[in-house]
Amino acid sequence: MEYKLTAKMFAEALKENRLLGLKCNRCGAYTVPPKKVCLECASEDLEVVELSGWGQIQTFTVIQVPPEGFEAPYIVGMAELDEGPWLMGNIVGVDPDEATMDLIGKRVKLGHKIHPGDKFSAGEMVAVTFSPQT
Amino acid sequence: MSRRARKLGRGVALVGAGMSKFGAFPDKTSRDLFADAFTAMTRSVDKGMDTEDIEALYVGNFSSDLFEGQGHIAPIMADWVGLVPKPATRLEDACASGGVAIREGVIAIASGLYDVVLVGGTEKMTNLPTERVTDTLAAASDTVYEGACGFTFPGLYAAMATAYMARHGASVEHFMKVGIKNHNNGSLNPKAQFNKSIRDLMNSRIEKAKQKGEPVPEWSDELDFLKDPKANPVVAWPMRLFDCSPITDGAACVLLVAEDIAKNFSNDPLYIVGTGQGSDHALHERDDLTSIAAARIAAQQAYEMAGVQPEDIQIAEVHDCFTIAELVAIEDLGFFKHGEGYKATEQGLTARDGSKPINTSGGLKSKGHPVGASGVGQAVEIWHQMRGEAGPRQVPGKDIRLALTHNVGATGGTCVVHIYQRR
Ligand SMILES: [Zn+2]
Image (cartoon, rainbow over all chains, first blue to last red; front, side, top):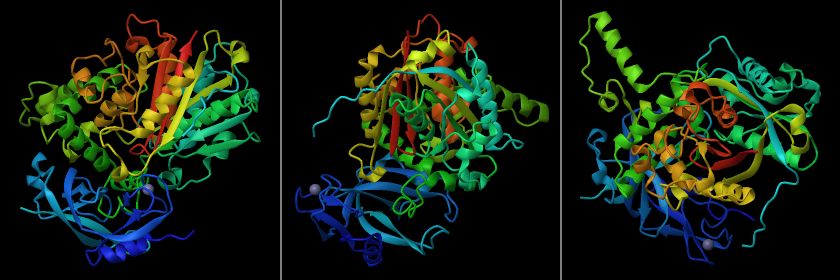
């Protein structure tokens, strides 16, 4: 059984601000980021679809002590996509020092950011970004 | 899905338990710490033991490879305490490695393969600078999708904390109260890394400022101290330094034997009557960020096997790698309703003299968190408390017959729960 959508294909599309995911032909759930089986029912009967890229912030944190290669402070969070699944990414366009609980529930549009990668990753990494819409 | 109730093939007893001091020890490697824990364990066996009796070793360790540049540590630990050529196996499930090692030891005895098994855990973390430790711990999350956006390990728990506040109306003060409680317990534990209460720490900072002739901070109480960003800086909002368990060197060991020979070793053995373990998706794929499904599953398995209910458990050591984690744990284990853990903590119910004492050892927060050893360290505290040997931190006025340990790997990708009985 081959992968329908690999991490590499997901990242390449994300670089064009296109969010690819897997729709389950058995239960209808979306699996994003992709994996071999449906997140909800573990079925392998999946098809590649493009999602809207819109969602709503569910939680966040402001990182003050970063890992190697990142510069603090920055905001990471999770959004519930309009199609259902949750996705994690960097919340951008908001001053990390001004971030408050008001962020929760904000409507966001998906984008991307390229990170040069570390010694364990095979080259660059592509991160999801969320821009709150006013 | 049909599921049969799981039972052990035969009973398993705990007849000895000991730990090294937890802390930062520049002069000690993981094998030295392991040997310290082994020695402490052998001294705790009432009727004595012979190393020759031990048939196999299971050792929990997260990342000696990255922390010390040393892989394949199980045979080294076996060699260090004189077990070669007995089988020696390392278990890795991030911060749950120690608890999983106990479970594998239990399964090995219950299967009938062995009668006497040594279970240990060891981790040497302080060789690396904090930034590299942060990276190494982050390796236990999903490095492909969580790593790209710079999520750290404290950051993932902070995201759970934010969700908990939004859902239940808790505040950062409620997290701080978990830390204050656990430091109060740890101040009475001579093996703890920080055996000081938050008030002691606060007072010693004031004393230091006076001695140096610096402006003396005017903190009115512990909460005031913890809210001061200079004394307690943010690591990943809303988690501050004192919400995070420290970077720790340490090891712990327990001796497990078949139930029918327990009295050959111990006058007062403990019996492992429930064991459970579960796994879960990465954090962004969870249905609920304020609960850990693997913990609920592991607890349910352990309660079913033991034939007991959450209210029957008299004390518990739970995985408080961050203060939010303890609140989630005491709810997932069924001690308190979902969303009520913070209120119970505020009311003192989880304090040493409360109705449900949690983390009498000081927890990972105050005792220290040498990740692969922590799960075994929890069993060491249960051993002391159930046998009435916990000294000044002994839970008052309780004849403890049932106790529980809860050990989580990373953000809940693994959770293992054990229930101990004293007969
Ligand atoms: Zn499905």
